[in-house]
Image 1: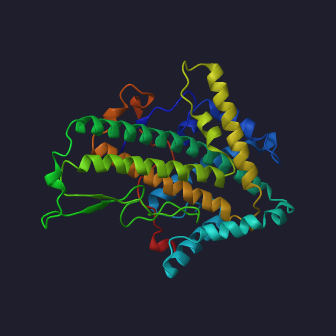
Image 2: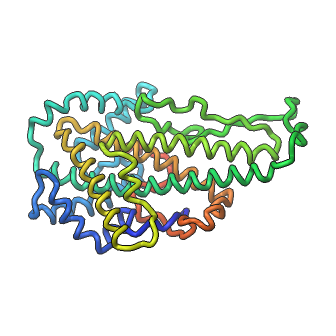
Image 3: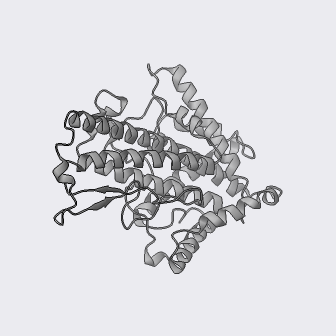
Length: 348
């Protein structure tokens, strides 16, 4: 298991939060969301615990994310997966989400059930926590990618074209593709037509061993940039913005109560944004909620694939002197499986 940073003065990972002293204060704040009451505190607490455990198990088992949580969302996920396999497409949820979004005005006129409101609160908080953890993961990726690129530039300083013999196109040279973000035989990250999945993504590398680090550094930089774009798009899909999410995870020093209160305030605003977005979709129009979690899952998988490459290449050393040099296991987050997500045949 890959280690990652110790996040900040408030608990960023979902399961760390569930075990922390902030848990009950946060439950009280969630009951202030529209349509919820103080008496709903125990129900929200149960939903947070149940949904968090179920999601992490489902991700590990290759089951639908919402299995054991919400039936309609589970069926939407299964149907989308079957339609994608049958048609040769990767994903059809984006179109379904667009259709559901078009029906928001109509859906907003119909009251949602108490169960759905409580689930929306729990799902909004889970999404907020996972966005915060993913945000810090991407910041760590960017830091290492930039430092590794600088290190390679320093190593190549004054080398000039001395390695030109290795760039010849002789029959003995063989080329390979390094894909950024997503790799060969893995599903693209993008769920929306706003992005192209592989365009300008591959970096050609020659067989010259001296060129490989340079190309790898470039690949990491490209992957980092693309994942930040996808993260910003994910924030839009959930009704919030990356500035607020970043405020949840600021590393301002010293770690004091003033900064912690700022972070908690940002956290509540993010949760509130996502909750207000999720409640737009009643029991018959849940595709946007499912689509957002699918996007979160895919970006997380790609991010942890890059982290695995960092570990294999001994690049965590480049975090020395930063807040990311204090390491902990990421097991307390939900979406850190670091594996490709495919539904098991038995679930279809």
